[in-house]
Length: 276
Image 1 (cartoon, rainbow, N blue to C red):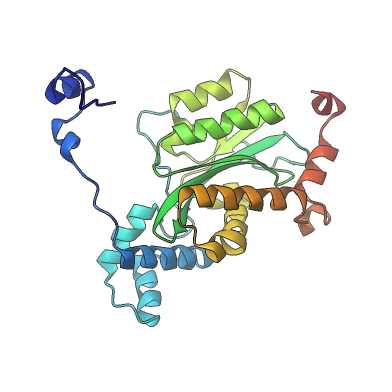
Image 2 (cartoon, rainbow, N blue to C red):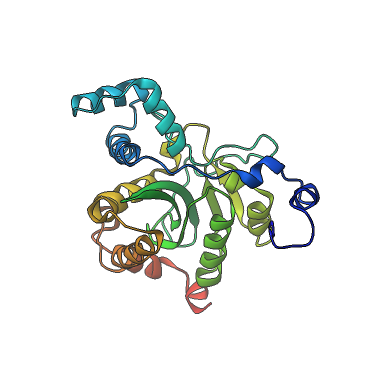
């Protein structure tokens, strides 16, 4: 937004945009290579043992031969948006001014495509950095409807993913997320309300409320991300495109009677939905 070649001074531009002048001169410090390696290990440990907090993860890392204190582990976990048990990775933190909606899925039998969609964000390690991945999944079929990568945690990449899913697959009856600020933002909620979609949100710290997309993250990381060590977001984007195509079309699930997500999704839609 700031144009350093504009006739207006930087001070005046920052005043108009209501930005701090000091932020114009801030240069982000690159994350040290050692910290990136530690964050990758922390991600793996957390994925395997989500109940572990900073003290236990420190012990695990020290057992691997890393000299690291609990304070440093806590700092890295905060940067990654990770907290211990039953609290899921807190990549999307609540906004105090945003409305929180009740959880609608308790006791509900979800057995057909476009009945319930879910969305979540996860941390992705790369060879020389990291990024964030948001995915929108059809709950019954486990089909990944859309996804986006971003190097920041603003709401725009979540909105882009939601818009693509709606354009390609119509609308669900219910949309479930956590209580993160990206999903409670006015733009995100307005897009759902404008289409008559009922909004459901997990209880605070109840990762199990969105268990199927948590399982997706485990599959994505162990079957793709950890094996590749992407050099860039563009490389990650290409790798994930190939993986999600495999996941939807070819990866069979025991819970779906050995069907693929695509097979289950399309065969459980109503004739009207398929025609649309």
